[in-house]
Length: 119
Length: 112
Image (tube, rainbow over the protein chains, first blue to last red):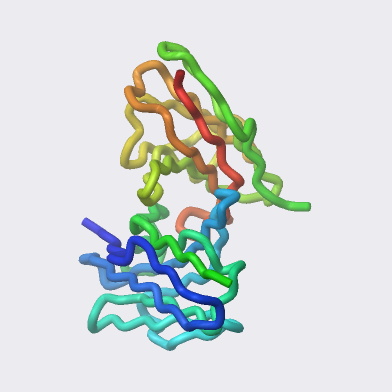
């Protein structure tokens, strides 16, 4: 069965600090997809990134970067120079897929990390 | 503007009553999903639908029912059989099953 663990329940930083959110996953499939979502206080989940298991290239998008390492089953998310607007709950999620790369559709979420950025 | 709407934002229910949560999308997505979120926890899948007139149970379907009569609509009914219905309910949609899911603003249900 698939499982996603976000061991950091809460993180508190001061503005402009860099912060890394950890995500460790378990799956028996060789083909799968990993996601990060942001949930601001309004409650709506905002999609940040999707990565497939065959693409281990790290990705950078502005102040956000993601480090995917299959060897350690981790998909960590770093925010550089954090801002108060980054305060939110961040979820990592996993979707398994068949050998052809077609996802089964079900997302398994981690428990989330509450990030608070202080001015 | 394309998007997913959920109504109402807050919903109160008396014990023993059924209640229906609305989810509408104008993104022309085929697949739709319902999740439940409890405080301090991640989201858990209740039901999902790949196409019109078809839906499948997720991990926690007991006490819930859905219908998919139109592509743009996927209402969720919380029945009296659901023992602990107080939660935050999120609807999502995607172009196809397994593609990136986009979420609505959610409905907070409180049982009095």
